[in-house]
Length: 140
Image 1 (cartoon, helix red, strand yellow):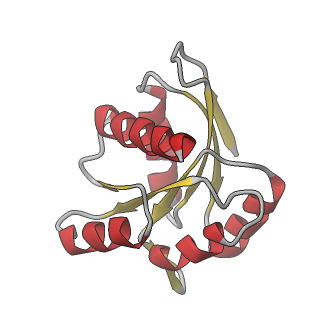
Image 2: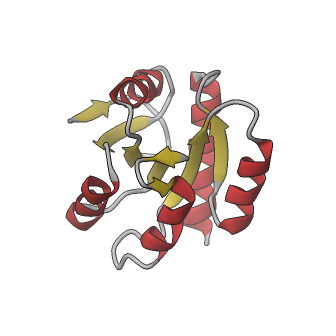
Image 3: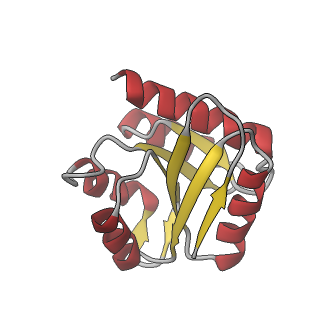
């Protein structure tokens, strides 16, 4: 499934991929994205194999990665994206549960653009993280 959200934002259309094994959490992030001032085209993946196929199909500006995936940590997907010929420059944003400050720090130190908490996620936090991450990658 994909979601196209059209708004007036000077960043243009942002192509995004969310990988999370929870359909509820994927849909929640997509609903929150509708509340931002960003034009999103969002694709989703439920597991790493589907994620790999999505990377091969299209180019993404930002990828939201759940920390806990079946059989793999979201942290393990960073080198996969960085080695990908098409999506190596995509901004990556880690999404994890509450009270995981050490994970947030490790994610940013290892190359993720930002980290947001899953449970209290609000449109303003999603928008801020996305704008900052995409602008940072476009500048580099």
